[in-house]
Length: 392
Image 1 (cartoon, rainbow, N blue to C red):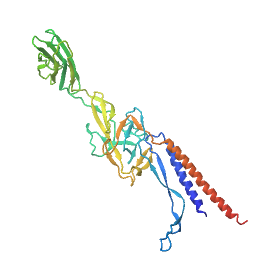
Image 2 (tube, helix red, strand yellow; image 1 turned 180 degrees about the vertical axis):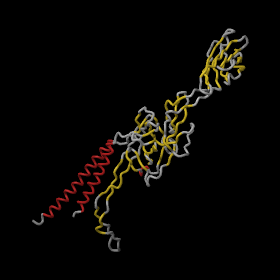
Image 3 (cartoon, one colour; image 1 turned 45 degrees about the horizontal axis):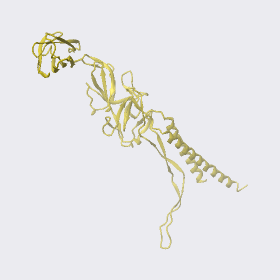
Image 4 (cartoon, helix red, strand yellow; image 1 turned 45 degrees about the vertical axis):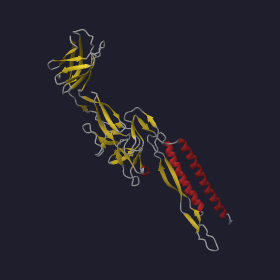
């Protein structure tokens, strides 16, 4: 049988594979985190018709004469270039800007993906649309240790930020030096006890006949405390004296005494009530920071990213995920923005990196290659027909 017939068949098979790969790329043009593939061809073994000979004194050397036996698919390579960003505004949507993969777990198997569309399930775990659980380092008492084993990242929906007792407060602003003697200015600040119960700390400033103001401080459950502040002729603070009020130290160092301005106010206090988790934000290093109803912020956990020596050696596992193989190398876990890993962006997704113009060009090339190899088969068939027609 003619060798060209089988060469044509091998060409049909190879170009059909190219059509399959190209069609899959086009089908996934809008798949989040999808990476396109390309088909690579190589020739098969060649049949030796005449071996090479070395040059002699009276005759030159000759080259080998070989007839190729067709084509085969050498490999299907995955293109891991960065896809474009699509803003979603959803805080649980995440995008890796740079190298790396999200680490997810399905049952007992660890998989890797670039698709960062996550949602909390009923247990608060961040999962992919098909239920794979995002892995990372959960925080313990607000502290994230990246040196330990990874686990399921969970949003503690019922987490409570403990109350904090008020121990310090600060007063800033200006007390007018031209105020009449006996003028009173009253300022209140909300303070908290150890259980988070709120009460008011009241400061009453009374202009005295000297160069300053008398202060009366009163907190719920405690006796009134008195003190005073005096100012220099240029309005700067001279002296201040006020003992702690029911265990709360009041800082008066921010006061001034210029004429015509009344801006004295309570600047801050360090207590708070207990609070529940409201929402969370994602930092560029992959740390999930919870924001509580009392204004407190606390790390929830940190996302673990994986990288490979040879990402092209990963095996596609479906659902936009990959699994490690012997040629990809083992996964090297790390945090975003470190050790060659990309940074994380919340509220965005990485789109497919399929280039439609290139894929349609490949489609034409594969189609024409298929047609040319089909022509080889029909031509070989015509030759065989001529052979059979020699005897009638």
